[in-house]
Image 1: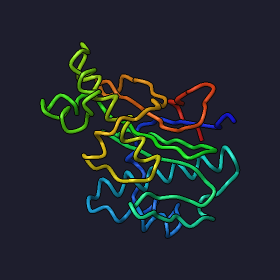
Image 2 (image 1 turned 120 degrees about the vertical axis):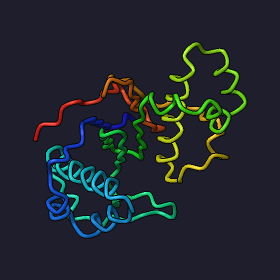
Image 3 (image 1 turned 30 degrees about the horizontal axis):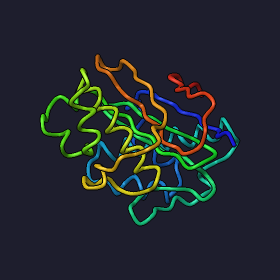
Length: 205
């Protein structure tokens, strides 16, 4: 059965006061977002759910404020009967809304040009062979990291480096974008068929 999947990519709007974001969301969502120690992470999390609420209202006339946001044992947030995932990096937000379980990640190429030994921390022996043969090693690392992080978000487990070395059989869906004078990868992992993978770059209320 084909999966209903909608993916959005947008720049985080920091002009909205933090208190306004908190007032727009129910207490279970706010409490989840405020668990982050860094003020920036709190804002990004609040903004992600701010956009998520607007999207559910616009697309399905569903108000997520009528649901209690819960967390699994690894801290993954979820609403009963609603499937979504949120990621952010370097001022950009990526959101996936789906009829099935889903995981999403956004990363920038710049972050994979710093540590020459990074590949040995995240790649399996099979992937290391592919890595050594590829011409653009930074791009390979970027894509593999996004794939694996979206996969672990899909299954609802936190990232840890021993598990990162696992070979993931199904590739998922991904696209590259030029953002902030850098290359960004948006990767969505799901086990269900998606007829056409699209990423909406503009969100209009």
